[in-house]
Image (cartoon, rainbow, N blue to C red; front, top):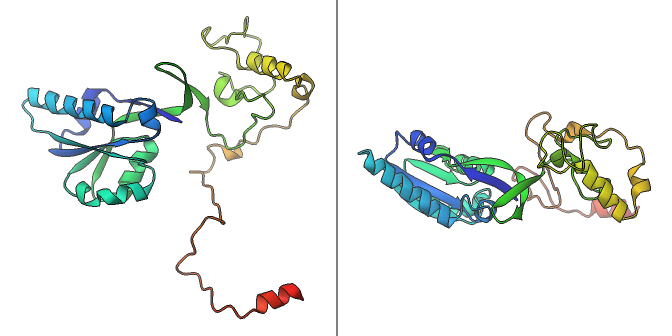
Length: 242
C-alpha cells in the first residue's frame, strides 16, 4: 500500500492562510489503513484547524468528507456540487489523490495534508516499512521475494557489500542486510545454485526515466470518439479465410 504521514499542523495552517472555507477530504484506502487520511484523521485534523485558527482570532470554516478512492474520478464526481461550496480543498490522500482532485477541480486550489513516503507494509503495530520503489522491472523471482532495490541501502545487485556485519547493514545497525536475507531465503528454498547464476544488468529505463510512466491495456480501453469504425462489410473476415 502507499504509506503517508500527516504534515505538521502549522504547515497546513500556513498553506490555508488565505482561505475562509475549506473542505477536508479523506481517502478510504491506503491512507486509511496507515492511519493518516481516514475518517478519524480527517475529523481530528479538521477540529485542530478550527480550534487553532479560533484561538488566533481567525475565522476558518473546515468541513469534512470522505471518498473511497481519491485517485479515481468516478468517486469524485458525486461531490461536484459539494466542492463548489468551498474556496479550497485539503486532501488527506496520497500525492496521486491530490493531483486527481486538482485535475477534477481546475478552478479550485487543492492542498496536500500528507507527505507521501513509500509503498510498504506494516511490520508491527504502528510501524510501516518500505518494500517497493516501483522500478518497473521486478527481480523478486531472482532474489527469493526480497527486493534489493528497496531493502538494500545501496541497491546492490551482486550480493552484500563489505560493510555488513552479522546480518546487519553498515548504514544502520537496526536495518537487516537485504542480501543476508536473500541468501537465507534462497538457501531455505534450495535455490543457492540459481542465486549464483550471473544475471544481466538490470534495465533501469523502466524506473524514473523520461517523465511520468504509463501503462496502457488496449483490451480494457474504451473506443475513442474520433475512431471511424465504419460498417462491417465482412471483407476482413473474407481476407482471414483466404
